Image (cartoon, rainbow, N blue to C red; front, side):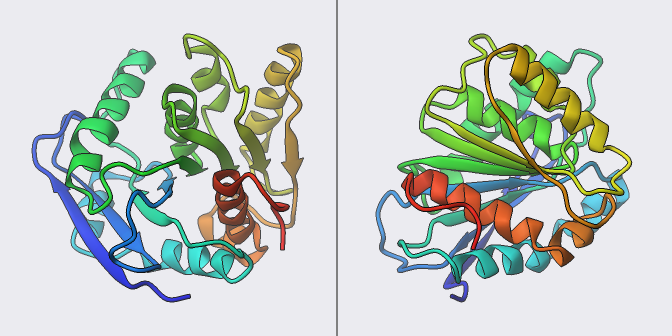
Length: 236
């Protein structure tokens, strides 16, 4: 299924401490009300790369989302692609607070679908910290998938309620990903809280293209879509 609409969302002087942007995609009818939303948050990048990407369209992400839609048998959700914030405060709680304010008060109000019926997220690398924060601190959020995730343990421990009840979660950590131990640490912390975490390990290293080449990116998006519908299995 191809994209039917795309909009660049621009937020000057954002809560993140810098001019920010995101990309909103629709893959179904333009008049569909309160469509569910999948939020993708990318990994850490330099300010130079951030500025270079501002006027462009993240087609590599949208392609993996489209691949997942081919295995999804419900109405397509919208996709919101958010680059990893540049602001890195000493207090991680401040990063979290600023990002959540940016999402709810700055991005959603200017999106064509400002009140999605449900939300699920996919995080890559450091974007997983923000993606899990979004799921844990957002009422309609229903699940998360991470790719080479970083910061999930911190996001979980810093949440006020540490409650994943009713939310589904899966982590993809490639066999040669130098940061895969971070996902294992998160698994241990969840296990101590009585929460089981499935980790999928496939061939590849720590780049988005590795996770795309081994089908993990597609499967992460499909998992998030099934979280929205609460039906079906996460893999095609």
